[in-house]
Length: 293
Image 1 (cartoon, rainbow, N blue to C red):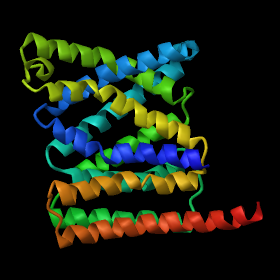
Image 2 (image 1 turned 60 degrees about the horizontal axis):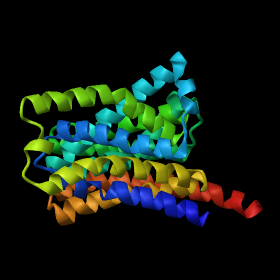
Image 3 (image 1 turned 120 degrees about the horizontal axis):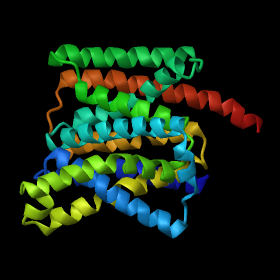
């Protein structure tokens, strides 16, 4: 249990600190960061697969259902990455954190709609309160918080596909990056030919190293998460996942000095209230079960 909590907490800590990494790459266009992230992620994952001699899973991806499900999950993951990178480099860290606060509630809703899971009254109430929060933010800003909603729903749909996937964390991420690699490598080659590849044109060695480190920075948190998730109950995992958007939110307000008005606070407070309702109900339901064992 302790090691599982440690692994999962480290994964969410890494994801929570990601704005620092992408903010350090603000001179690189988001699409270029995404392309390099795909290229260097595959290089890092292939090294792991070689060291572990883990290749039997390639037989499974020959099945059309497995193949196309991972093509779809790869597209969802790349869309999530691109929007997140753009939001950080364009000073929308607070709204990006909102997306990951909403994500657990999106997961519940997708489970109800797609997997036909039953929803308890408290879960319905949590979703309703969160919807009020999003509605308030939309009314105050005069526009829908698209960044938050795209991040929440794209990662929710990605999680749904991975929940029912035939491959594990390392194998699944490896195949997703293999699917995306031709597009990413082709784009990097096009940038190089046209003299726009920041990896080559930048005068900063730090920027080059940061682009290379996109590989391990992407894979390591996912592997930590997969390891931790196997060792702890979902209720504890669900509570730990709020560590990531909380850190992102604090970085946006305290470090990057993004505007956070009283009007926005009302919307966030409604969503935080929905999460407290959701988490509290889950803990209360788990306590009697734990007492019986």
